[in-house]
Length: 387
Length: 124
Image (cartoon, rainbow over all chains, first blue to last red; front, side, top):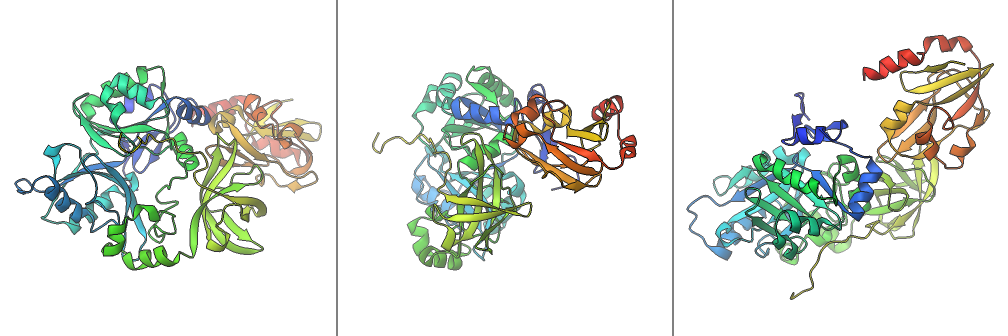
């Protein structure tokens, strides 16, 4: 990313007391591994893992002071501004709702994937809480500012800490350590709490498990992380297990499974483009994206399970009957399935679950099978409608 | 029999003409749990420094280079039988990868002995 030394996380000392395995990721010196990748992975699937994801790009995007709009009107205004860059229906967000979307370019490719949240609090009408990827945050923020100059203000919050608490015990831990009210949140909801200073909490994550992502000021982060780690259900988890967890959950890693040439339809993310936006066709790259939405794309992102034990990692070419039909964009080992798994793009003719493929690993063709995503079922907390 | 080490963390132990080869305890610890390994076929010849085998952990795939030149005469049946755990459990004993008939034993002289390798690892 840059020639300068990687940045230290605000909680650097806390993690260094627990591991020496650090590595540069997107310009930050990040803890990669604590107890061991597979142990950390399995702990997160069975208890709760604490991840420091402060390298990411949280920000607040708000109408200027004195905008004079209230409630729904203020939300519609700020949402319409960000909708210039993303294909999701942001205006349609209910108070306290979070949506996954992507910044698209004029060619219909993906510049980043991100979360956009409408605050639950009436006093925050006209604000959005946005979290973009670490590796793209400066470019994303510049794009947002350029597209909305003078109409809204973007306030970076990446001087704060972003902690992810993930796993089946996450709710019990969050209720015990932060507030009982965290139990009442559903998947993809946001709420602020007066605890550990003032925190912004979303019930979300990138592991496929139930859990929370918590934005906390740096001066309060040590207390919060310490209190969470003191809970017997919680262990710190490094970036290594974060990657294997998201891979099992079939989630895209930007720069690998998504890039500026790949459309959301190819990536099998059509569900992120709601009807109002499809009808309006008013987002960057709408022409290609809607054509592919209606007619299908020529290639598609799929799950792939090698039939033997050799992992097929990023860059492995995919063949069928001697002809190249795709490429692996991320791959590795699934601790839960105890075998290799990959995500890749293949020609649609070979994208149906059960289709046989050949992976060229170190020059040798190896049989593999297209598999539905996610590899490991999601266990998000989705309250029943009306409750 | 002395054990010699390469900068890429292979070890080699010579008994007559037969060199037993594996990865060091340090390498095994750095890799973490091995989830896959691929050994060369018996009869295959390698020159010192050639890619000879592959070892993969959940984290990454690493090449294993031939520490000296020669022809493969035996592959570790435990590893060939997918008992990769043995690489983590006893990397410098039962977790050996292959045995190779050395074609030029003087190549060993360029490799580090145990003490030199321990110093080298300390500096990493």
